[in-house]
Image (tube, rainbow, N blue to C red):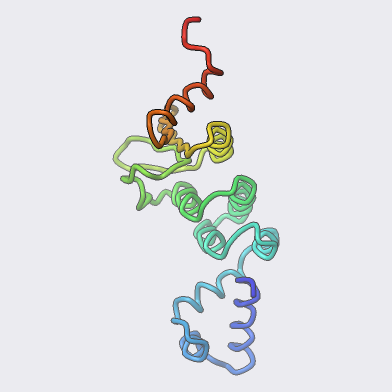
Length: 181
């Protein structure tokens, strides 16, 4: 059952039996909050509901997008999220950036694909194409690559298992030609 089908089923229980969210939650073994958040998915624009129904967005992505009030921006972020394969966390960060609320992950060093302004109020926004570039580099180098863009600059981290792996990665990056030759 997709998140939208689940929400529609909860809505039918509410309508047919005049139940409260709390009562529906008790009946299906979920909390009132879970029921309420699920029902909120039904208020998403049809284009986002299609992405959700088609499996291109998860329920977590869709719930994060509910934080954007402007429908056009909500749809734009949803499409970008689906096209670039954002994580739920990246989607939440993009929503926080558009709403002006600081991200709870701004202080972490392990978040990828975000643009951070170093100021008292930090804003986080996934950089378009960064997820794809990170994926392509990881495939080319056959290792995990993470990229963090910060106020027009950035840092790329390339993981290696041992010194032989580091040498292999170096050769892949330089096509085997040392610098200056």
